[in-house]
Length: 249
Image 1 (spheres, rainbow, N blue to C red):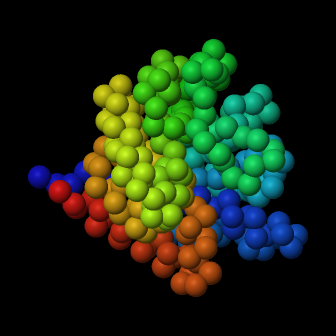
Image 2 (spheres, rainbow, N blue to C red):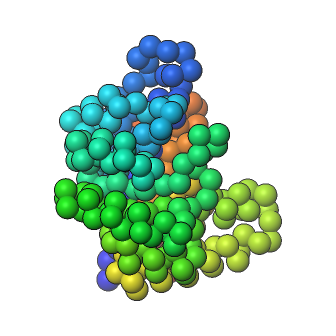
Image 3 (tube, one colour):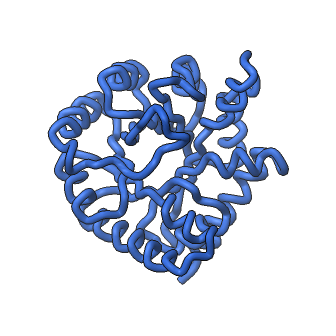
């Protein structure tokens, strides 16, 4: 029986972070997207933030026009971002919590508290033919509500687990089980299950043991590794780690 495939979405936000630190046009995040795809990436993820700290509107437009793989548009559930998404029409939109003062996305979206707004928001995206993903913690109430508001996908927040693994904290095993159980609950509810935040070669390989996960979205770690081995090689190594993990029984 063949192993179910697992996809890698490469987040190019921090290529744009480097560009914006100096100003100008280089390094070009769209070129990074092409390099990632050539190396085996199955899709590209980019987060257009309210403050445009890395990805810019023009980057999103070029990505949609130029790349030959699905574009996953990460964004806050605001009217501004909805208008941009409906104009660009990416393959999918992943709705995430966003605070201007945070360095990176902290925690998952509170779908329970925001269910009324998110239900209407998701309906508008789906009407336009855009798949809807919600970035959430692996909590039963959040998973159940994700299905109720009309999401197609949940992306489970792996940041807590990855931090515990890095710290050699004994609580990592319990958090891993929480992710596995959350993935099972989401799949049972009819949701496609993705994962992301903080994953590296080791944690991606281990999480790929769980065949319920369909896709990992990884960015910061790959851009960091690219400094030493190049982006293409970093993507190839990540795909290899995920495939090793997927073959685990």
